[in-house]
Figure 1: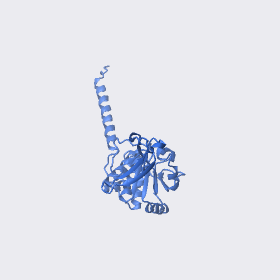
Figure 2: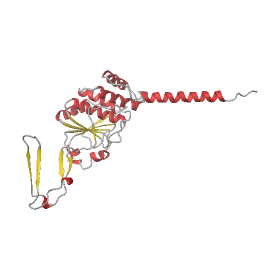
Figure 3: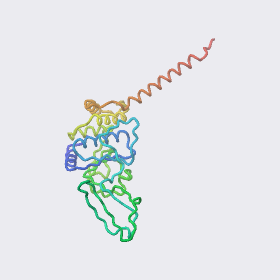
Length: 275
């Protein structure tokens, strides 16, 4: 559980931030991913401009999906960049104007007199630039594992406060929330959202419960604490659906029954030894 001093510091950081990145690594466990997505959804509901990021689009097999905040894989999307194959004689001057009736932006590239105009086929569009007031790094051990979300954007990470939520305190963090005493990051984030006074939607509650159950083997692990059951109770009251460990339990039960049936069949087929 986060102490009072860190909670106050975090509250101030969030209050001052308009744009927030919530980032989790490509190798994130279902628990870490659930913690990141639920945190992003709650911050979005609190009125923050949220971007949820991961180096690769995570697989969705059996994971409780939510459309509240979509995961993106590219950090730079602030500036639209137009590029083309450059020949000096094809560019004499560049002008722009905005059509009053159409409401469209027009960029005009005029070639030098007597020269061929720019070939439209060579024009390419892309996005660059990233701006944030605060970054949450969920389950991130080191920034390098964020791959393209970190490479070439080192200045962003060095100039913006970073809140780390993981099971230790990494050196890159401005504020580290160490979840080492909790069985899962989902449990820590669920309590953190409540401490911050933010709401948890039904989808976010389902994700957090899923993360807790996957780590604790359906709450059967010895790592489960009284606080775990308190958190689970709160999530269920907020509409969470239990989908995390149920299917695995059913599959194991079927396998056990099948094995018993095979054993019984073998016993019936064995000849009876007579003395």
